[in-house]
Each structure stands twice: as structure tokens, then as C-alpha cells.
Image (cartoon, rainbow, N blue to C red; front, side):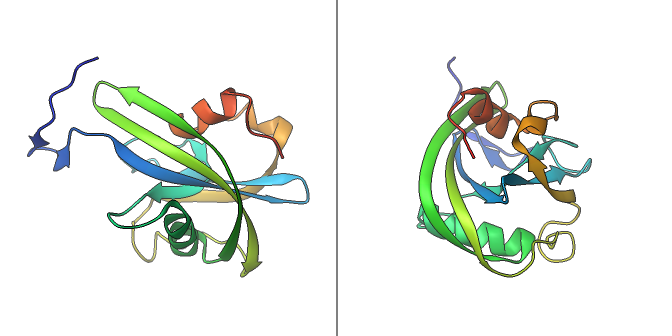
Length: 152
């Protein structure tokens, strides 16, 4: 695929790849997943791990810690890098790096609707690994999950 590398003034985006981080948090054999709102631009109603775009000058680890604190209000410790997934669509190209983390302090709760990104998430829960295959997954997480590299 060959896409123009230019600024899309109508959508306020550049047509270049976005780099993001996904944070895999496991507790008692269950993975923490967040359901995206029906009001987001892509992935409406789909499930994914906590995460988001890496900001300019930010490390993957720093982005994981920031996004987790912003989205669910917990402090984490990164324990390992798990892998990556690439999502390439005509209108969107992203590369997501997945890390595993443990919660150091705090209780997971949806925060961003009140703080930074109105109505980004509508549900947050720990899910058994076997249940994930039957859920509607956000494309970057689905691609990583389907790669078979994700293990709890």
C-alpha cells in the first residue's frame, strides 16, 4: 500500500503511522480490559487493554505509566515487554507496543470520561483469558492477541 504523507486538514491528522502502547495488567489469572465508548472515532464498543499514543519525546515505559494513571488511576511497574502489533488500514496506520505491568497502588476505575477524553471508555473489568477470544476486540489488541504471543 502506498499512502500520501501529508496533513489531512479536514480530520486534523497526519497520514503517517501512529505509535502507541498497550498495557497488559493481570491479577489472579485475569486480564484487565477496557471497553471503548460508542463515541470514539474508531473501535466503538470494542475491548482492549489500557493504553494510548506515545507522545513526542516519551519512552514506551513512560507512556505506559502515564496512560494507565490517566485512564484508570493506578500506579504501575512495568515487568516486561511483550511484543508489538501493526494495524494498517487505508485511513489509519498504527504500531502498538505491548508491555506487561503490575499495579503498585490504586484501584482500577474509569477516569478519563471525567478528566481528559470525554466518553472514551464505558466499562472496565478483569476477564478470564479464555473469554477474550469471544469478545469484540480493538484492532491493535486483536492483532496481538491473535498472534498467539500473549500469555498470562
